[in-house]
Length: 65
Image 1 (cartoon, rainbow, N blue to C red):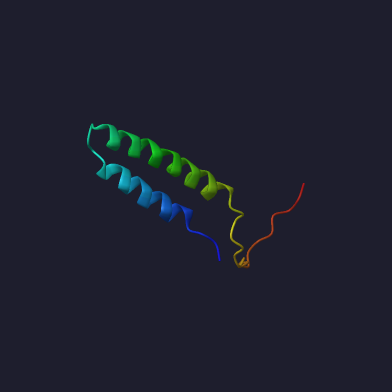
Image 2: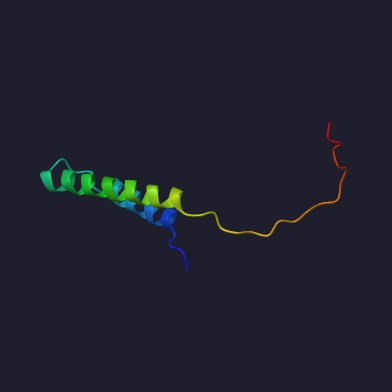
């Protein structure tokens, strides 16, 4: 079973949007979430592609030159 990094990243981004304060704790939390978002983004794009079924459609074959 693979993790859904895209969904995790979206939730982290939403959490970051909730931290609108200018206080030190809010700033530190946004910075921490930013690092987690970057990690989720990296993981999301480094996953091997999910194998799918290829369906071939009948049609003209292009002649090779």
